[in-house]
Length: 335
Image 1 (cartoon, rainbow, N blue to C red):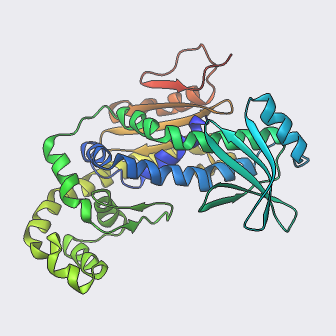
Image 2: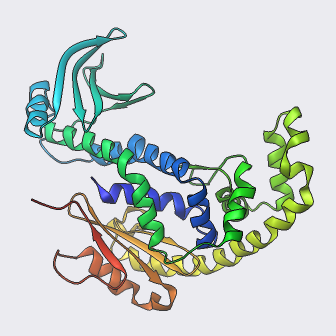
């Protein structure tokens, strides 16, 4: 499992809604954990993993079929050759932990990967070892995204109360919206963070968005449109929280960005392997470890002065040496 790739997508998802207080973020996740996990897993599978392997540096020559079969056998996976589905040639099917992946030849001479009826990925030019690693990472993303989200949010050190959970219930029918990053769509309570902080809308503007999303019949029965006063009243404290947190996080992000410039290729923060997300009381930092591990932890704003030292330590970490307080190493055990 590639902890770093999955944690990176999780971090991207929650970073876009981080102006919500941590309690409401956690409450929203508890209320619709399966949905959020599915959204993030799809991003990992369809974009994060392919982009990572497109940069993969193994054998410069692309794999051939026999090499894939040999590597699959070495790892103990069953394979089937030579079937045909919908007039497409399936050169090989590989079953990993109960999930079957089909390598399909393309007219262009390349290969595409089919692992669900609606999901097909063109395989980058990588060696056979890379192909099997990629299949394992895709399989693991479906299995481990949900528990890794829980671990990520647990690192915030916050709990949610009944009122915050009731907010998650009340706002669960808000229509979807997309953040300015355009990577994820958000439903329910998390959309308020996008509407308030990212899009600069007021509660009345959100009601207009709700009305636009409804059919004529739905307008009459929509909870928010039937009682707009309650909707506006319940939005008010969340809007103030997002505004306050946005100011705090803006200051913190400026400081973090200045530090990361020193550790980023050509001084471009977006190219840094260290990922971060600012929340109401501190920042989550994430760094890769070797090829598939990750170091993740939470730094309270009261310790923000130490951030350069912490970033340096997690980037240069060697297994067995001490990690900064609040940080953990996540990786599969080695034999």
